[in-house]
Length: 510
Image 1 (spheres, rainbow, N blue to C red):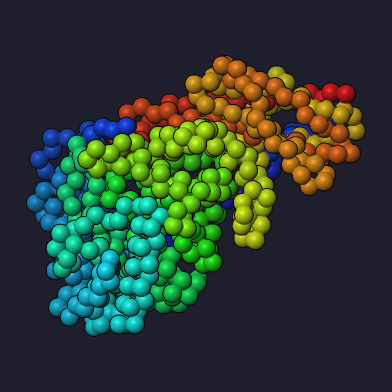
Image 2 (tube, helix red, strand yellow; image 1 turned 180 degrees about the horizontal axis):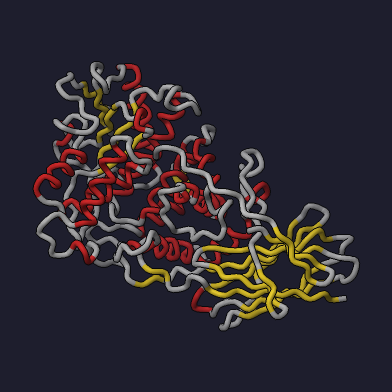
């Protein structure tokens, strides 16, 4: 959790005319090998050196980015560094109480205060100085967060032996706000490429969250959401430190809203999210705009659809994380695979859930409990081109595009016909009829094995304001898992079903 992501421009709006209707559109378990370029290298591998350079840049405030992810990638590639590079990695992954750390306490006296479950370390002198009062607040928040996660059925962070003085999880307080960082969490453990993949972790938070560095929210509120977010990474690492980037960050942003609902700090991430960018593959890690943070809205959708809770937290995300467990004997699913298996156990599928999520994002004020109060942005309509009587577009995996038809003077019904990708690619078409009464009727078009289907819906101008059709590429199929070739699921696997052709037509009925 760190500096605010940059903002993208808003697509241009165009209209397509169809007869008397209008379509409006604006623009499992396996070893984690390192990339081929790193195998067998005796000098520092290029990709590992890149990870070191990036971690150094982010921690020093020279590069904008996600500190937790940068440090995690450095930890995972540390074994491929040699000599001075390896020593530099060890220093940057070290704790502030260790000599040479980027945010180190140096020779200043370190004070440690512990609860029954967490320890907090700080100094009251030097550049990293905090106060005893702020340390007490940090300990109270970290202890409460830990206890909440454990009560909800999550695994506690893995014990770290005598690091930090005892086996309890550790939180360090340091001046990191001057680098644009709220906080971060990382591991010092060596992680074997063939598992197990559960590791211990420690976290670092800012020393005061002063208003000049963090103008949004109060210092306590910023401390609260940072501890919730970063400590959740320590919990995640107790299952699988190798898990997919987008999933780790999206669920950590989701948990902020679960634990501290009134702070609403994660609303900032919806500016670049599936709500505003439905054509972007949802499982991407994009360090340029922070899109992966905004994907928390998908887990909010699942939490509201499947509200069963334990210890005050929805169980669905916990169950998904349990499926990613890469510790000895764990199922070790990757992110989308785990999501699919958990939703299947609840009587649906990941592709179907994603399809209705994409449709729901066209009316977030109605679709989410806090959508209206918090002004969730509305997903834009999608670009289509008219070709041989069809409205045509291409859609990548885990992305969507929506077309809208509005009634004219004639016709009482509308027949919507779709020609999508074949069944194996998990396509879907969701039809929503917006009534003048304010009600919305939503249903899926039944598709055959070739992805074809149709549905006839009400279209009388006296009763209907519009009909929208959301076309969805729900594919979660990949090849070359753990190839680090892409920013997507399954360790940067290559998607099998991007750029698929989707066709839509509509005919008036009387």
